[in-house]
Length: 100
Image (cartoon, rainbow, N blue to C red; front, side, top):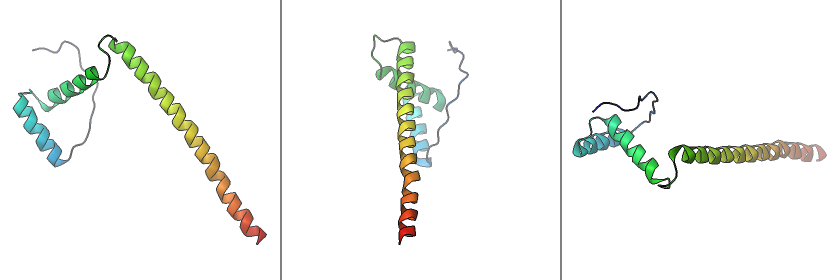
């Protein structure tokens, strides 16, 4: 069967030896052509299961991207607040030592 869509993006991840052997065994059991095909199919099934059936993929991806952007902004705000707190702490300790 030929590839209908050109696949030009790559995703890599590491496995322990035990995980690799288990993946190889399940690929053989399921009759997958390759580890890559099996992993791609598993990821695609997971993506399809996590979005509503009536929502087009491009809209789902845009919504997901927006949510990731919101999380990024929140993490930046928390980091900035932590930096403000961290910068203020050493000064209090130094001032307290100078008063002694």
